[in-house]
Each structure stands twice: as C-alpha cells, then as structure tokens.
Image (tube, rainbow, N blue to C red; front, side, top):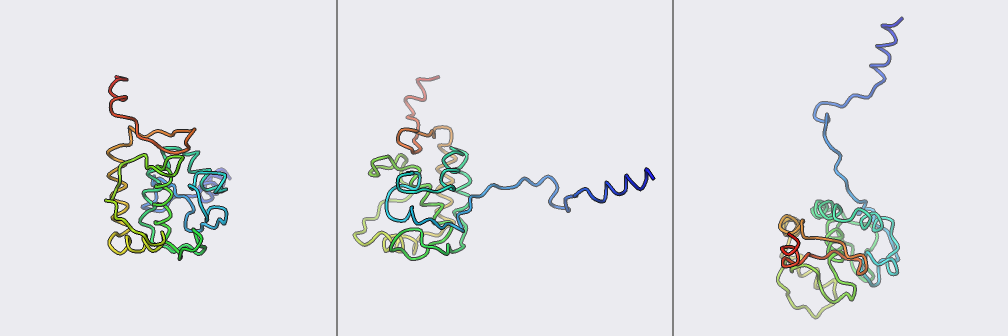
Length: 180
C-alpha cells in the first residue's frame, strides 16, 4: 500500500521536460495585444491623464527593472491588431516597446529627452507616422534593440525614476562622484 501511495504521488507531481529544468521564465509585457483607445491621441504613455493602462501601470511600478524587459521586446516583429496612435498605420510589438521606452525618458514638458539620442536627429516635416516609416526603412528592430541595450549597459547604474516628472533620468556624473 505504501509503495502504491509513493508511486501515485510521484506520477501526479509535474516534472519539467529536459531543457526546461531550471529555465527561468522571462518576463514580458503583453504589448502584442495592446488595445487602448485612451493612449492614442497625445501625451506620454506613463501619463495617466492621457493613457489609462494597466500595462503601463505595471511598467511604471516595475521601475528600472522594466527597462531591460522592454528592450528585450523590441525585436518582436508581431503586428499589433489595434492602432496604437490615432491616424497611424498598424505597428509592430517591438516598435511599441521602443516608443514606450522613449516616453519613459521624455521630460514632463514633452520637449526634452532625459537621455542621449540613440540615433542622430534627422529633421522631418511630415506627419509623425511618415517620419517613423522613413526612419524604419533604414533601421531594423534588431538595430533599435542593440542601441537601447548599449545605452542600458553603459548607464543602468545612473538611471533613476523622477516621480514628480514621471520619467527616468540619468544621475549627473558630477553628482555621482560627489556622493563617493
């Protein structure tokens, strides 16, 4: 009877298949199913007055740890079914990850980035979606991801969340050295 009980317990316990043992689950945000009409018109994704989103609330709550997760999602080529921005064509999941990261490093006046540019500024007087399309003709999602990863690796210790401005900023190198 004891042998039967032990065998029953062993058979009912889930066992990982080879290759799964100890493999950590990679966190992802459900960007490929993005569907949010409140975030389409204006404002930064993290501005709750303009974008009411449980996904964005989670990203902001995760703080700095959200950055490498979003970077990992930039290479996701799946199309998003719903429009992300008004008057834009459909975009890919990785593009949304890139845009969210960009907004997370945009000051509260929406005028200045709080990080160095990843690409040289190419002036464009067209609609934003046209300028983005022109940019994407010469830059792949893998390249966007690579530039973000380089930025992250070089600056991750200097990045902090400014709660008042609701954006990430870089700690000034002078301020950092005076703390030591």
